[in-house]
Image 1: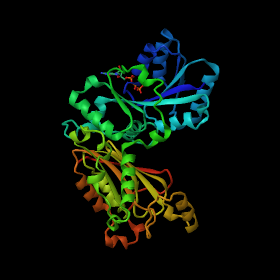
Image 2: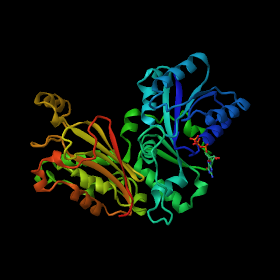
Image 3: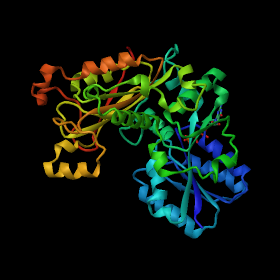
Image 4: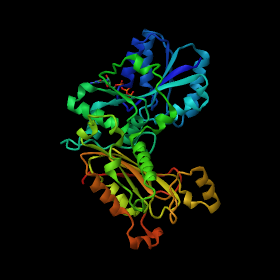
Length: 426
Ligand SMILES: Nc1nc2c(ncn2[C@@H]2O[C@H](COP(=O)(O)OP(=O)(O)OP(=O)(O)O)[C@@H](O)[C@H]2O)c(=O)[nH]1
């Protein structure tokens, strides 16, 4: 029988260790714990070990000096397999580094060698309610959120990773609720529901969560988790909507219709519309005309304060091969080369790719090049933001210019990123 696994994510200091200590104390099962902490001194492992030695004697294994989701990927698999071979236990909890991406960790338990002895039960993300509210919850605070630096592992902005942990999980534990007012708590819940419509949300203090919610909940589903982010659903909803309107010629250039895509997930079943109550809106932006690199970068440096999340693919003039993923969270936007437009391959390769993706929308002149972004904001005029994005598109005269002459901060190599910090002045 495979051993069930719960992965525990959340930003540094959100309360993962507190929750885990409580869990180990409250639960009868024989639980092994794998703790990963960035930095040489593995404080968490020491803490949990001290706690577990005194209580139930669970196995604690520490992976140090790195992040299990990237450099230690192989080591994670090796360690958990070794743990399984050498010890007897009923359950494994992996406390992921505060700066790790949960998806690659989860994949190791599904597709990697660890998928044999283990069965991934749930990915749980712990959110610090106070910090989340300060960062994303209220544009009108007198004391603005502190700007996020880059994380220790490289170029990814911390807020971006934080939202990824929210967007890829089965259960959200909103901790430190003693540090927010009721109104602030409700607003954070509404934001979390928008960013991640699939996950259940539990509000708590000092990680006091019923073990049944964390262990053997059988919540995990790789496909569902990978598609569950609010921004992805908005983009899929927009694409589907567009397909159903395909016969309409008006959809060709500017098929945006946010009145219909707006917050579509809750139309059927949620009569309270908490998102609307807190001024939270989801929108999509789709154009088949490239951005001017300099004007687009200038907009990213001056995004409206109410924008919480923006993510999707961009077509940027001068980068005719590179499909660029834009990801905004907190105050920073990363532009990363994440692939190639199919239209930049040879005709024969284009045929092959297009046959394998029959649903791909294709323009006679530009092929699959397009910009398709999800926008999540609060107290924000989506129409103004759309108009500002439109101002970044090439003009008719610029369409005829030599795009390679444009000043262009956008990277060219696969996997390369540029980060633009917004000064939140607009
Ligand atoms: N006020 C308040 N403090 C909390 C709560 N939960 C945890 N803390 C405190 O927050 C601090 C960080 O908690 P940890 O459990 O170490 O957080 P962590 O997520 O494991 O942190 P890293 O190991 O840095 O990733 C500790 O001082 C906890 O006592 C809570 O609900 N309310």
